[in-house]
Image (cartoon, rainbow, N blue to C red; front, top):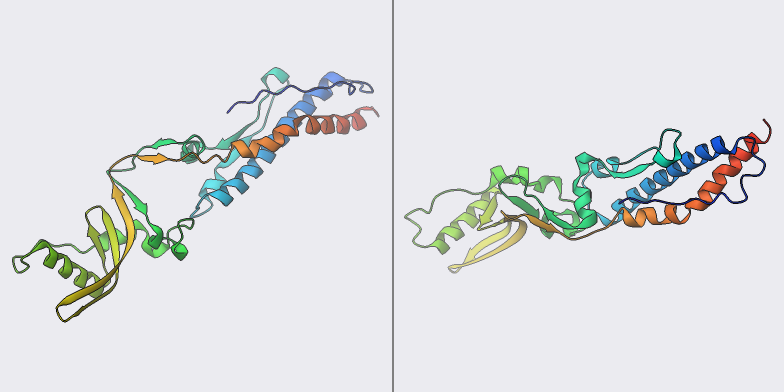
Length: 234
């Protein structure tokens, strides 16, 4: 997102010993203040709207200050660094490339407080679950797929392991057999997909820059007034 703004210095030239140099400083300061405010707003927006496991994302929302003395070439930039390039996909929406052969999508039961707005609990990270999934071939002693599935659930519950069914991973919360009937409660933790994910547009930068842009002229005039106080006594 690129913004080109025009500044009105009408009525502010009077009283300066060297308005040209003062104007350059004021423009540079204004650009840097607007970028810093946008960065602050963006961090607040991301914390409010996104599920964050740690501070990695907000630490990679940064801004570059304007430099130089040529106003036409001055620019400040704010946004996510290359290391957090996934935030560009969040801003615009679109397809996120697959990482590895498949993508594991955490479900509600894998997250803190059973809430989709919360991060995955450490004990249910997919990296910790994978080595603890029940495995084994369909034995001849088990005449049907159903019997095999029941045997897998029994093992998973007894040994506190995880169960994989087709493209899903479960935790066996309870398991009992009574009068030949099986009762089990499964908690859905992950869905496994080999497809690229479609990310819904969730803007965080656009609303963050709105207020600084609206106040751009006000910031500029404030910076000029500060310089006028200094310049007037030279």
